[in-house]
Image 1 (cartoon, rainbow, N blue to C red):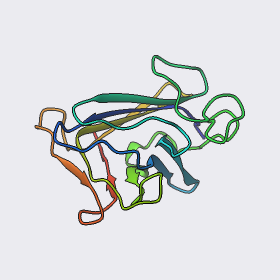
Image 2 (image 1 turned 120 degrees about the vertical axis):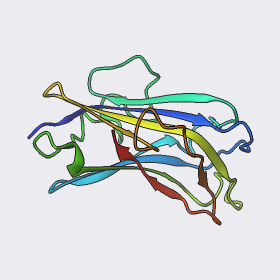
Image 3 (image 1 turned 135 degrees about the vertical axis):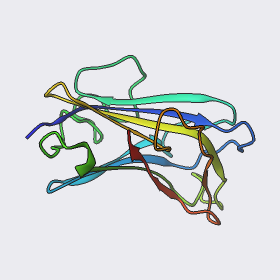
Image 4 (image 1 turned 90 degrees about the vertical axis):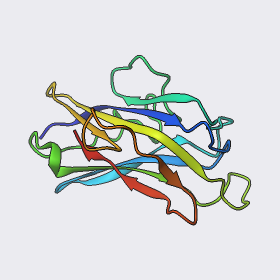
Length: 161
């Protein structure tokens, strides 16, 4: 079975969104093989997601053109090398990809709402295949605003494109 070689996450924060230090994760669920979550904005880092900004995160066994996400290098707890993730035989629709925000801030206070204009995730496999997921059905559609907050929900599943 193919292994995920890298996970690349591209996030565009809406200009009206408040700055948040809430932990944010990307999750991958594979058919027959379980899944894992990977922190994009983790409470042990000093990074904040700021309205109007674009962010690129990456988890990789080979490096990439993005700063590595928290604890994803070498034998870190989020390393794809140390803890490989298998996928079904080349079936993009057999994988589920989601983004989740914790409902509390890093300091334990009530959550800050997070509004995203666009989210895209690329799973690159050691077989050379790449699977793409977005917050919209097609790359030609206008982005739909994704709202994370206690009153809106804290998770969104992405569509295969």
